Each structure stands twice: as structure tokens, then as C-alpha cells.
Image 1 (tube, rainbow over the protein chains, first blue to last red):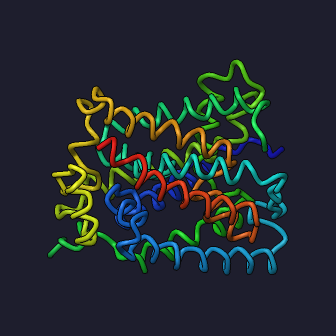
Image 2: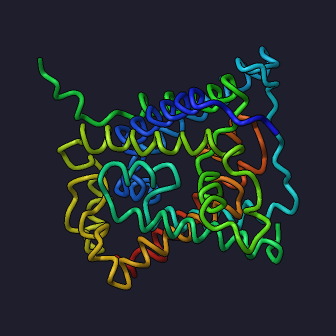
Length: 145
Length: 187
């Protein structure tokens, strides 16, 4: 486990989060309308974002892994592999999340950005998302993973 | 000086590549794995850790950076969606607009339908299902799947992990199902 970071580092992450928040907001990723357009396969916008974000992410992460062993902080770069197991958690959990994404029009990042953009009722969505996460924790021993 | 451009929405070819850089940037800085939904777990661990081992860990140490990131997202929403909010409706396809109109959506100004996402609508069964029920499914589903659009969809895929590909496919299957099987009864 890594040691806690000083406040200065927290500000770095706050600023990165802020940039991310501006991009997903101005890029309309947080728009319920755009999400509906995507799930109805009637517009290219959201698919265009994924189709450019994914290759960028794959390319930069693979390059990073190939050319650097350590992060700038000195920490070794290592990404823990996700255990496949039966795969049920990814299929079932993913589908349940997808249902919620269609209803609220927002995944976790956009929930925070929507609240910031003045849609105060999203606070109720965030509270219920917390209840959902808590419920998962409670039921976890009896769920297939 | 004409500052009108600050209020305009950004096209996909600007937003996409910028978002795509984040997993590598976080790894490069301090070997951090991009994933927003972890914050739901951290917040639960901070607020209500009782009753489950899942929330028994040092959330401050493990999740401090990520909670700062989430706070940043909120601030980014203030800047992008409030201070420099696009005054025009989101430019969705005509077919989507027609489909949503037939489901009863009337107001197309703003990022979300203002008739749906209001405190008053929270008191109707349909509104509560969309706002609270939808939020619950998001929180439960991401925790069960071990990640959301960012953690699986971006970071996991960027690391070429099969579980993340399964999760991303499932996100879409659930999303399409929710759109065609649930939303028509709730709007």
C-alpha cells in the first residue's frame, strides 16, 4: 500500500479532475439526450468520442508500459490484472450498470459533473448510487463473481 | 473580443482524444488507475462502513487522490455546464428528438430534460424510478462489475484486459435494454 500523499498532490488530482469534468461537460458526454441518441444508434457523437478516446488510451498506455518502468513519483508502474473468474460479475454487473446509465443518462463521472452544472436533483441520484454500492457490499458474499 | 466560442459545445474529435490521454497521465504521475466509480465505494467507506467487509479499508489513504479528482469533476461541471453553459439545445439527431417527443419529453433545452430531472418530478413514480432507481442501478452495477465507463471502458481497455471488454459490451447491452424496455414506461 502506498503512503498517503501530501495536500499538494491532491491539488494535482483536483485539477486533472477539473479538466476531465470540463471536457465531458463541453463534449456533452454528460447529456441525457446524447446518451439516448447513443443507445438508439441514431447519432455518431458519442461513438465518435469512444472511437477516438479508446485508441488514444490504448496507444498511450501501451507506449508508457513499454518505455517506462516507474512513474514520475518513483512508484513502479504496474497495473493489476482484473481476474476473469466466471465472468459473471462483468456481464451481470455491467448490464445492471447499463440499465442505470440509460435511465439517469449518466455514469459516475457525469453524475458529479451534472451536479456541478447546476442539476441539483442529481444529488438524489448520487445518494442512491451510494446506496447501490453499499447494497452490493452487503450482498457480495452471496453473489456469483 | 467575441467570447461566444467559450459557450459552444466541443465536437467528438476534440473531447475523445483528450479523455483518452487520462489513463496514461495518471499512470505516469504516480501509477494511479483511472476509475471514477471507486469514489462511490470510498464515499460509502467514509460515511457508512458498517455491515460489510467490502467497506472496511483506509479510504483516505487509498481513495484520497480519487476523491480529489471527483471534486475536480464537480468543479469542471460548474465551469463547463454552468459558467460557460451552452445556451442552445444539444444538437441531437432529429430521429432521437422525435422518439423522445413521442415518449413525452417536451423540453429539449439544456443537457438533460428539465421536465424529468427536477425535485418535483422526484415525487412521481416515474421520476423517482429514473432519478433514484437509475442511480441505484448505476451504483450497484459498477460495484458488482468492479468499474464503470472510465475504469473498465477506458483504463481496462487501454491495458487490453478481457474482463473490461466484457464489461463494456454489457454496459451497452444494459443501456439499450434500459432505453427500449424501461424508459418508455417511466417518462
